[in-house]
Image (cartoon, helix red, strand yellow):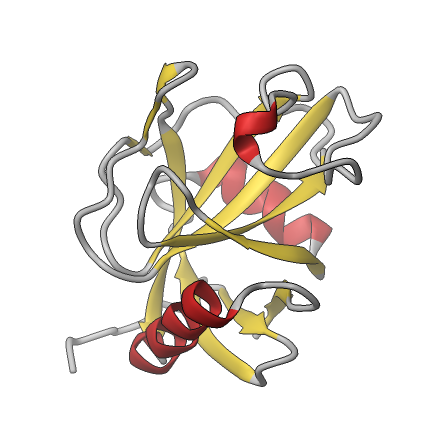
Length: 173
């Protein structure tokens, strides 16, 4: 296991697939994404229906109403997240409104001008390129420090067995 030394100001979140009873622990990257980390931390606990990515590959995420007083700037951005990255994306309801996303009639974003996507990447070879909009950079605000293997297994099960009835939750650890 890699060295995950912590400092006195380190903050951690538990990321859970609630129905499956699986969780992992992530350290907030307050040194690289301080505004995003503060916004998420202040809003915890957060959670919602989980989705598995269609385009980005090895990603699970929840779509949430905007919770920050002001959306964070694009700090610590990536278009190639690595295993264990927690990413924050902001979308408008119009961006998620096409049928190609597969949210159906009961869209997770219905009536929301701004939608926040909190995501966990659990395996490598991800590319944040969307056929409708092009590059979709995300803010890397956390990194999993414990439990990524068991979470990755649960994510693979979610991909194969389906996400219906499952929730993705973020809580202070």
